[in-house]
Image: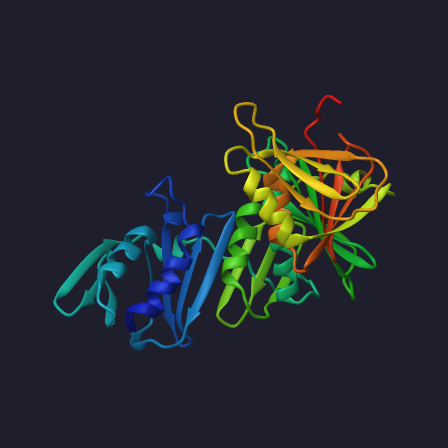
Length: 356
C-alpha cells in the first residue's frame, strides 16, 4: 500500500477517529486505525466494537492498492508534528512508513485482515427524520443523560417512535428531559442510544445523512462517513407517568432575566430557592455559610406565594437549550416536581425538599 496526501486532510480524519479507539489496551487491534487504498480512494476505520466510524477520502495521489493498521494515537501524534505539506504513507514488511521531506517514521502494524468489520446497513430499517432535526432534538436532552448509573439503560437517550410523534427522552433520576418531533411515516419502535454515541453524533454530522437501525445497532451515514453504535439492551423506565396531567399554575417568564438572576446567586453555591410573589421573583442561595439574593420585579398575577428549591444547573441546562425569549414554568405546589417548557422541548425537575 502506498499513497500521498496533504497533512491537514488526513489529520482532520485521524483526529475525528480518536474517540472510537480502544485506549486502555494498546496491544488490542481496536487501538489501531485501519487504512485501505482501493480504486475509490482511501478508506479509514476505527472501532472499539461498541462504536465505530468509517471515513472515505478521495483526494490521494500516487496510490497503490493495499491495506494496513496502525496505532491511532501514535499516528495522530506524528502527523500533528509534521508541516502542512504532503505526507507519504507506505507499507514495508510489518511497518507503516510515514515520510515528509527528510523525516521518516515507522510504526508497527497488525494483520489488516483481522480488523473488525464495521456493520453493513443493508438490512437495517430507515428512520425518516432529517439529520438536523434528529441532532437538534438529541442535543436538547443530552445534559439529562445519566453517567455510570447501575441501571445501564439510563446511561443513554430513548428514541420513542409513536404513531403521531417521536419522543427523545433522557433522565438522570433528578430530572426528565423530553424533546419531540412529528412522526411522518416511521413504524412505532423504541431504542436507547448510549451517551458516548450521542456526543459523537453531534460532532460528526451537520448535513443530511441516512439514519438506519435495528434492534441492536444504529447507523448514520453520508457520502464521506459511516458511523455506527451498539444500542443499549434494556427497558427504559415508563417516563410518561412522570409527566403531570395538569398544572395549577403556568407562568411565561423572560429567559435572559432568569439566566442572569440564577447565575448571580449561584457564584458560590449551586442550590437555590426561587420564591414567586404576586409582583416579584426572589432568587436566593441555599448556602448556609454565605448569603446571595437578587430580585426581579414582575407582575405574576398569582394569589398565593410559593417557592421552588432546586440545583440551578438543571435550570441553566434547560435554558441553554431554548430558542425563545420567554419560557414556561409550570407548578402545582412547593416541594413537588415542576415543569419547564419551550416549544417542543420540556423538562420536569425534582425539587430539593425544604421544611415549610
